[in-house]
Length: 598
Image (cartoon, rainbow, N blue to C red; front, top):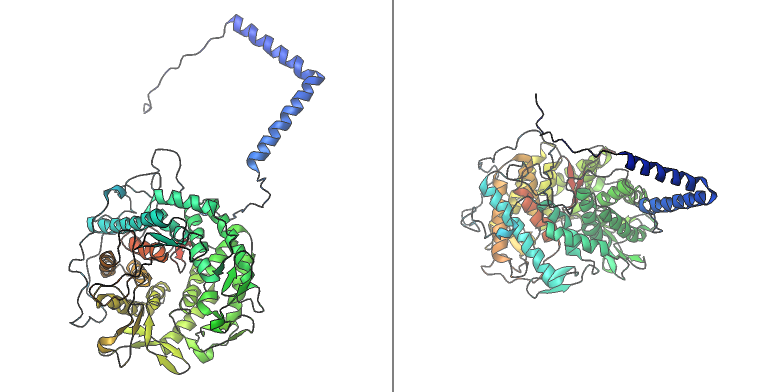
């Protein structure tokens, strides 16, 4: 068989006697030079110069030890290069072709009352899309051609995915224009606010969203910001929020790109949080000054730390130890878990009270809840088990015991429509309310692999969906009230909406787990309601009352809107091969990192 390549005969330069004689003369001269004493000195000097050059190129002379990763992540998304040629899309670990969209299936959970009206008439309506941000090949390998298994194949889902990306770009460009370098943008005033130390919370919290969405322009500018970050600021940082938003965001950016700057900055920031763990018990203080290292917990909570705060650091710190080769980060958070595992939780049926005094080593209340200040502790019990590829069975056993306690003490139904919800309990007194934050629980129960938990996950998420479906705006309240005083199952006890992600988080996970198309339809309705009531000329804003026709905006866009809400919506309309749940674990701020084998 002939070669597929065309053979081309190259001209050969012939050396004649004159050239050969010239070559011998030059060679003899060089031998005489290097055989002399002066020639030998010149040779040694040249070798020393060459050695210095090699040393400078290949070794770090900055004076600080480099971060060395024994377990570098495979580059799912390579960083942009100067080449103008698009990279090939990453090869999916899934060998089977993408499954076609599932047809809508009947609800298996109770139907809403007749008076509950849908938020918008057309779930297939797509907001206008800016044509400049289409899914075309670019320098990101995540820029996928139309036939890639990472791109939705049906046109409706593709348009919805693109609409969510356009919403993200609208919010990002408004932030860049009005509040660059600030932590958040004021979406009505075109100004910025520094409420997280002026470290650019919106930037760091949303870098991995840009990578996942293949938004190269935003990623490049965000990366430049990270490279210039200086954490030596006189600011009392929340140990919890700084970990989940900043360290979580930097870890995920490193995991998805392999760019060392993200890991180095994450380590630098974690080092400034370590003084918070200098307590009698190892339970960290809630707040630490990033410059001085002084740490404390709030006086308004009797100096106690909150369960969700000290129990939601483990994924991020263990990731750092694995990739920086420094065991200190895993050690401090493992001490926290050991302290909790030593507690006899029998009186609380495997659950843990909300507040723990870091110095005295005792719980300071008996409040059991899955809402604010309690929620993500239970989430991380499961996710530490998942992060280690299901090898940390101690975490799983404590998780299962806690879920049994939740089912025994806190899981109830409404009358007359049997909506499933989770109450709070203080001693023997039930508190008949449910935070929007509790809506994360449907997704967690769907992930844990326990068959009898899936129906509970679906029922809880249906209730959370009803918070949106029954409001006049199609948005969900911060807190829903239940009990005998609640007509039609629940009331809008705290009616404001701050762009929270927990409901769409559970919709995303349940869609991935069950393949039920209704979760995409519910998510799309929520997105349309956000577009209708929260979008401004600058970005997006929360609203003060979800149950009025024309709600007033609150002029705030939390960084988690771009880090979580829009990311989960985008992934909801993406194929399962994009950040597959059997290969990645999300922290509580929606920052994914790869599952590993210890």
